[in-house]
Length: 105
Image (cartoon, rainbow, N blue to C red; front, top):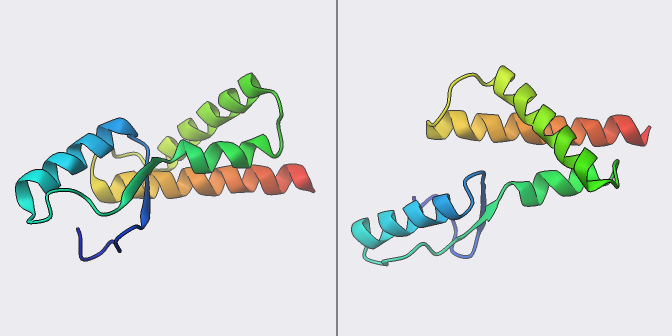
């Protein structure tokens, strides 16, 4: 993993603190470094600002986001495999971007 992620690079994940924790365990047990040299940020930090461009009411933003998560899950049916989880986040991001584009027209 270290070879594919540059030191200091930001990685987005939907598991937040959980993902940070298991990455720390992986690096603590399996690398000479002992810790990850990249940052993990919750994917909400990317998705929610997109939706906030088109909706100012926080409750509505979260409702829209939950609907888009369901739609992304319908597109990517499997769960909890790295490749599938990445596909899900990509689909969710594309849906958030498309909502922003549609509302801005």
